[in-house]
Image (tube, rainbow, N blue to C red; front, top):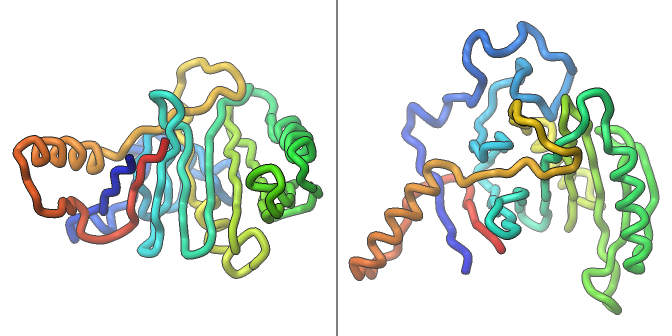
Length: 234
């Protein structure tokens, strides 16, 4: 069962950017555009802290967290008729893995009865595919994007209207550009998912909601007054 929360931010918090501490980042970014590494000098923006990702938010966004087992392994941004799913994977220090991951995706799509074509996108090589949601169903347009960063790969999947409509796609592409990946220093095997976590506000909301339910509270619980929704999906 999904738990939906609305984020509440005080007026003074709404303009506060999420950035690394003073002295923890170099004076200039190593790249000219995002997605960014947490150790880089990334641009200020309103982002929700998911642990392994700092995810940009907007007033029309709904955010879902994908759960596998006991771990949150991805985030989904829903905007009107479009969806963006992002995952951060560990990668070797000296080489990227998007080329090999992209080739594997192409094989999987073809094996599932879909079609796939490699094309050049705003982040480099990407895949434009049509994938059947289930056997026998009409294939749906999907774009697979990947960006190699310092010891990580950010994998993104765009579906819905934005897979074909450039105007709708720009909104989600800008989300990808503003993402900050928090890889951490711990050793991880290549391709292991960088786990995410619920924002502190959402964790507190869940605890409060559980307490109110136990107490027999009947009124609707809305811990966040405005902003995007955060949904946990399994």
